[in-house]
Length: 440
Image 1 (cartoon, rainbow, N blue to C red):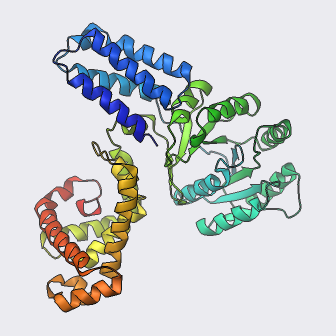
Image 2: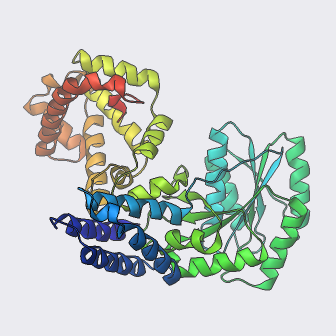
Image 3: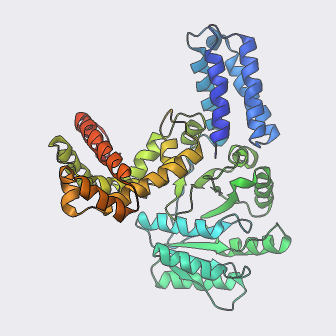
C-alpha cells in the first residue's frame, strides 16, 4: 500500500543525489516535496507538520551539510523519524494468565472476525490452545462466519444460540475454556457501521467483566483519516491496548498507518497483509519504515521462509545442487514453498531496491507460477527427474496436458537449465544463509 509514497520519497532522494553539493535551499525543496507526499498519502496534517519540522531541523545541521554523503545522511534522518512516527519499538503481545482474554473490537467491515481467526491460527502455531468466542450477536451470519473460519484454522469456536447478552456469553465461555484447558480466549465483538452509545456501552461492560490482557482495535487502513477518527473515539470510551491495521496489501495511500500511533499514542501490534489466514504479521516500526523508503525488509522475509522451509530439506537440496542432481521435482517443491510464503508482489517488496508495479507482479508473476506448476505436473516422474529425455513429442504431450504451448515448455526447460547452472555456482553461499540458499 506504500508504493506511491515510496516512489515519491525515491524521487526526492534522487533529486538530492543529483546535486554536487547539497545546500540549505536543496534541503528545503526536498522537505517541501516530502510534505506534499505525506499529505497526498492522507497523513494527518498535524503529524505531517511535526514530522517535516523534525527532519528539517536535523537535516539543516552543519554535520549534514558538510558531509561527503549528505543525501545518505538525510535518508538516515527520514528513516529514523519514520520509525519514531510508527512507534519506535515493536510492542509486545504478552498473555500471562490462563485462560488469557483478548478482545477484538472495531467497526463493522474493518476485518475483525477474519483477524480474530488469523490471530488464533498464529497463536496455535506458537503452541497455545486458543478458543474463539462469538460475541457478535447482531450481524447476520457473524457467528456462522466465525465457525467457518474456526474450521479452516483448526480452532474451536464457542457460541450460545439465541443468547443476546454478550456478558453472559463471555462468562459461559470462560467456564468452557477452563474445563477444556484452553489457555487463550479471543472474543470477536460486535461492530456497527458507525460508532454509537449502545455499541460502546456494551464493549465497556464486557471489558469490565473480562479484564482482558489485550484489547485490540481493528482499523481498515483503506479508510485513511476516518480510521484515525474512529481510533480517537474508541480510545476515549474503551481505552484499547493496541491497534491492528487490516488491508495493508491494498492500494490505500497509507495515511492511517502513518498517523494513528502519533495521534492516539497507542502502538500498532499487528498488520493484516492479505486475504489468507496466514497473512498476519507482528508490526515492527523499523521494518515498516524501511519498506516505505524502498530499503526492503529482509528480516520479515527470512522469518516467512523459516516458517515454511524444512531445515533438513534445505540441507538435502544444497547437497543436490553441489552434485548437480537438482531436478524438476525439487524445483516444484521449491515453488510450493515459495507460494506458501505469500503473494509474490509482497515477497519482492521485501527485497531492497526492488521497485515493481503491483499489477506487473501480481498478475504476470502469479500467472507464470501457475503455468510452470501446470507444466511440471503434466510430466511423468521420469521426465521430472531427468529433463534431458524430453524430446519433441514429449514436449507436445506436456503442452497439451498443461494447457500451454510447446514454446512455454521450451522456455521452462531452458530457464531451468540456466537456473541449475547458476545455483550450482552459488551453492557455496548456502551455508552462510539462515535458511539455506535453495529455500530462498
